[in-house]
Length: 163
Ligand code: GDP
Ligand code: MG
Image 1: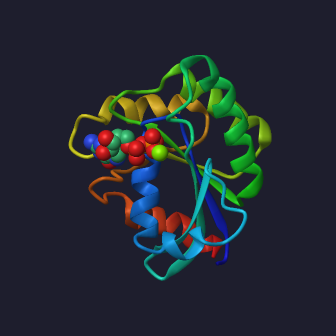
Image 2: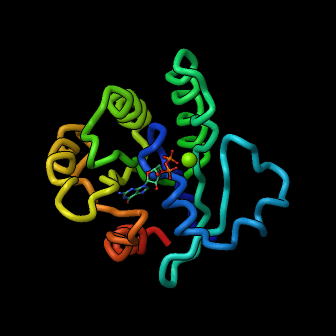
């Protein structure tokens, strides 16, 4: 496990789908270890010849609307502090939302190493959202489709130097 990667983002952008793709069936191994909380799921990720720890910020989905913003902030800050690098996902089909802006602000302020991912970018439906993502001030967005496995080679090449 050479480094840890936290997958950050508001609910429904595809964090867990990407987590599951990276972890496959290896979650069971780490699930039994202490320190794995309900809100931050940790797994042993495999991407090509890279092996690293991946953290999914779960536990947002069951928050009520009132508590969502605060929870999202706190969880994101915890995940950012735990991880060497963050993969911040937006939903390219939905475009950049107010919640995405809030999280981007946290990431910019912490000065953490961020990869910006525009997920759900398969086909053409995500084109406008990908362009939108440049406006977050977090660099060039990486086009991803967690569901269809697109963008994984590009992600590999970004992560490779960190291993
Ligand atoms: P999370 O709340 O950020 O963990 O998001 P989930 O991983 O639970 O995904 C939310 C929804 O988006 C689910 O219905 C997924 O099937 C869907 N989804 C995830 N990744 C993709 C993708 O790459 N493309 C499309 N079209 N849908 C996706
Ligand atoms: Mg999830």
